[in-house]
Amino acid sequence: MDVRIINPFLEAAQNVINTMAMIETKVGKPYIKKDSSSLGDVSGIIGITGDASGSFSITFTESCIKAIVSNMLGMKVTELNDDVKDAVGELTNMICGDARRRLEEQGIKLVGAIPTIIAGKGHSITHMAKGPILAVPFETPNGPFVIELALDSGNN
Amino acid sequence: MAIDYNMKILIVDDFATMRRIVKNILTQLGFKNFLEADDGSVAWEILQKEPVDFIVSDWNMPKMTGIELLKKVRADDKLKDIPFLMVTAEAQKDNIIEAVKAKVSNYIVKPFTPEVLSEKIKKIFGE
Image (cartoon, each protein chain N blue to C red):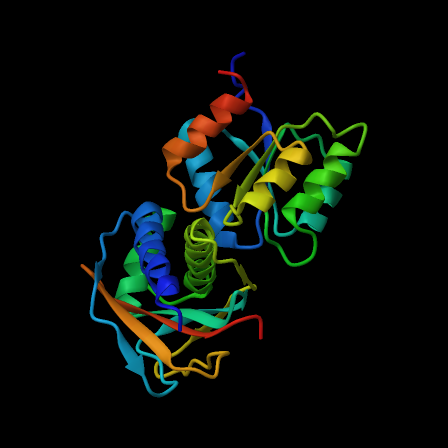
């Protein structure tokens, strides 16, 4: 995976969550994820094509996403309902869009598809690339979330 | 020109969350009259039936996209002068050029703060 692609996604995740939910996030140590089990309660996944192809996902723990969506909507969210799932879709979209904008400045062009949402404890995430899955954990005051990138290079 | 806070605003986005966020911000700014559509095609149907003073539309929607809606609106004699604000995560240069060519009134890139939305609206309505 092209390392130049990774940082824009990390910056985009922080920017989107900070701007839309006014929540500060701290990046943890990236690692290679070996299986498809998710590290949280709700995920958004989006297919990517263009100069690299594969997928990007973001997985939130329940406490983390409830705090984010409560701030986004200006009302207290107490359960992982359809509003939360809808918001996860929109966040996935926004982060991917923000990252693609940053990448375009470096001459890397990616196209994002429409996100899919998966919820439930222990759900699995199937990435659309053959290569390794890079996972990057983030901390927020209300619990962690993880982003995952699995991208093969070239227009394949 | 003073902004008419009673104007009817059509909010178009396939994500209910985003419609709610936009509506919340517009309400905070003092606007009161809203119509909502979850796709460009639904927005187009509303525009045939109801007078609308301002369209705030997402770009990326499954059936009819925001840019398709904008082009249809600008090509329609009755609707062509409605101010149109594109809300988009699609801020690549090509997209912006396409929207400007299609005579978008202004555009706003997601994620955005209430202040940015307020500024764009003031610019559109010449305040």
